[in-house]
Image (cartoon, chains in turn blue, orange):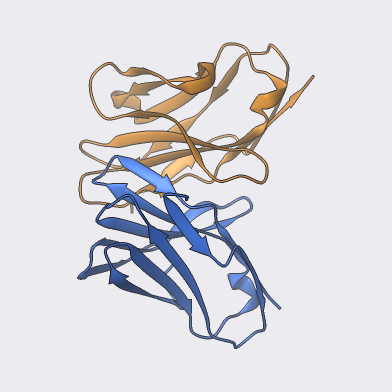
Length: 111
Length: 112
C-alpha cells in the first residue's frame, strides 16, 4: 500500500456541488497538507495541519475547508464547486520540516 | 510575503547539454531547500534537499544544487542531461514551523 493514499483518483463534478477529497497516510507523521497544482502556477498550499487539533490556512484557502479526523486522515472539501477549482490536488505528510511524502494526486474537473 | 521564484518557465536542451535551473527565495533566516521532479503523469519525487552544512548538495540521477546564502539562491545543475530528464522541476522552501512553499516550476524538454 502507498504511504499516502488519495481518493478518488479522478472526479468530474458539476458546478455548485459539494465534494470531498480524502487523504490517509501510514507514515505515522503528525503534519499533513493539501496543495493544488495548475499548469504554470506550480503547487499552491491550500491548508495544512501540524497535529489533530491544528488547522491552518494556506495561500489559497478561499472556497475550501478541511477536516483532520485523525492523525492519519485529512480531508479537503469544496462546499460549492466552481470551474476554476478544476486542478490536480495533492495531499502530503511530513515528519517535521524535512521528510515530505506526497500522494499520487486527485484530478478534479468541475463542469 | 514569503515566495519562491523560478526564473525559467520552459527550458529546451539537446541530450548531453548542461543544465542549470534558477531558484531564488525571499525568506529571511534559516531555510530548508528542496528540488522536486515530476515526470509526465506522475507525482512528485524528491531530487535533493539542503538543511545545513556543505552548500553543494548532491541528489539522485546526477543532479546537484548549490545554496548561496548571500544571493538567496538554490540553483539546480546537471552536467549532461538525458532524454529521460524531460520533466517539470520544482524548487521549494520552508522554515521550521512553516509549510513547504513551491515555485511555479520549470518544464525541461530534452531532445535526443
